[in-house]
Length: 145
Image (cartoon, rainbow, N blue to C red; front, side, top):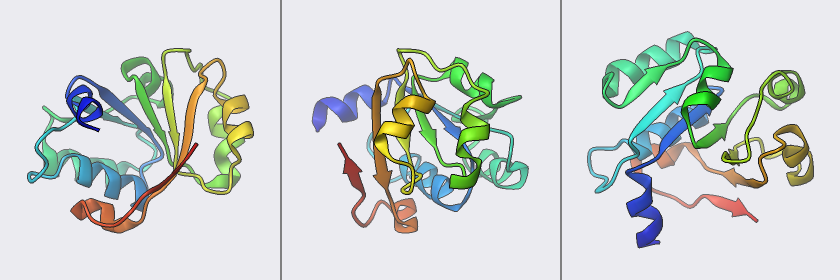
């Protein structure tokens, strides 16, 4: 766990789909109480209001709003996918993922096999199920595998 936390400070996290759950995760990652933060978080522009809110709350040094979803992927190593399940295929099929990407899906109803298919050639994929309380660095987040 300590090694993962230390590595976090060197990572840029990209977020595709900035809704309530993704916003909560970002707030938890950038919480002032956290001892280690990611280097930077790049947000998709889709939910302009929530993205602007996060930019205002944490500043341009930590949060950036990308021009489009592909720019999020181009700038980040870890990709948090939080689009609505009905939009998953249409949003993700337009993107060029790379093998260097680590994919964390917050779409509980999308199977791991479909996630791997939609994000190929990325192979480091997992599904996480956080609750909004993660914004306060509390609660449990289920992950698989």
